Length: 308
Ligand SMILES: Cc1cc2nc3c(=O)[nH]c(=O)nc-3n(C[C@H](O)[C@H](O)[C@H](O)COP(=O)(O)O)c2cc1C
Image 1 (cartoon, protein in one colour):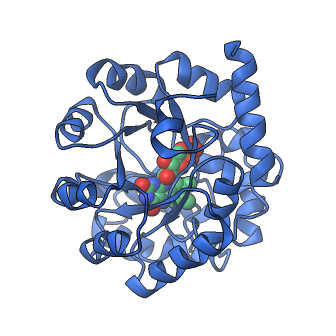
Image 2: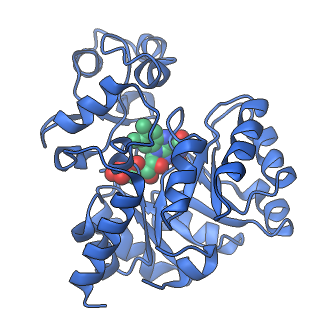
Image 3: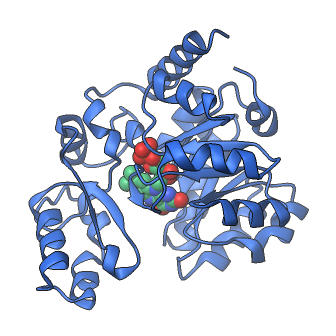
């Protein structure tokens, strides 16, 4: 399936593996890139040496294009942004904000820049400041979320900008990808489906929770902190949600409980105090497969439905 996204990024399929803090390291990213998509290494709040090593290891495992996701809220975002230039990274996506201040340096270095946007306004601003594409991410997504849904946000962003739009949030099979394309997207970004891949290095408990989750096993926490997150509905997530709702947890206490909670989920599989960030589509993700199978199945399914 050739689109402006496959042309822009030089990949076979317009499928991007979402940057996922603590999750998206070089093994996963290189597997997705070798499968013909675009793998991303997540910068998260990682130390600069960690990200440098991950980029170098990824280059050893694939000669295909891959990228890095920069979380703009990260205290060392400036260092990671410069590191991507120094290490010759070809593609950057950004999360949680406006990457305007890095744009000129990234463009000068020939990097393709694709910010994640939760709104039409930010999409337009990103186009103006030179983004090559935008990733319109709906509230169905795992991790930090905006309010608008993929179904409503994608066509509005498509109508508002000339650059290609990638749809994210709630896409896990060919039907989801075909639907996104019907809305005008030219690529998809997928996170949750790749959590249940063989190459994903998360704790087995995390994978098991994703696979076992039903449609109702998903919950958003932290709206009152201004940083809402979509998670698997574990006891811990329910405790946070209840504390938020009935006021028994102040926003400060909530923040304290969630510091390091994603790491505890990903690395330790700790169901008592870990936050298992995961999208609403997890109810449909029931099997661990290789990234190659996932990418091919999604792409082939979409191609068939779209009659291409
Ligand atoms: C565990 C997890 C961690 C995530 N961390 C980040 C992140 O660090 N930066 C970012 O831009 N997006 C992050 N996301 C969002 C993904 O990149 C992607 O856009 C999203 O998962 C797509 O929706 P889906 O989960 O329904 O496929 C994260 C998602 C998950 C599930």
